[in-house]
Length: 132
Image 1: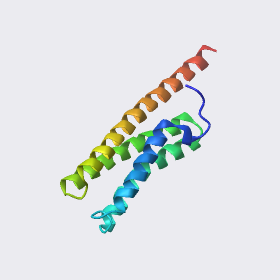
Image 2: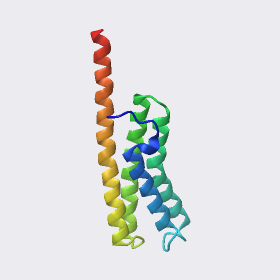
Image 3: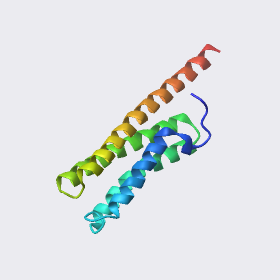
């Protein structure tokens, strides 16, 4: 994997950002728009994905980055939970639900793969140091 210089270049961040943008669009429409508590909660959950990827990346070390990717993955589960409830309450249409749910699953999968990659990389670094 090539060295990434900016979090904006990470695919997981790009997916997370697109989720947040879509959640903001949906939350500016009725019936979510006038439910201020719900609007705030779903926006915070969606923003947490890209926020955690960006923050973790900026610490510039893999153990911290892994920790923040785990937080982002957890926020993805929180978001999916909210989407399911919104759909079942009739506050989210099927198309928007399907789109956001699929993107959230994609985010979780790619975040998990990235976490595993970084853990393997860190383990290999420790082995290389021991060999010297």
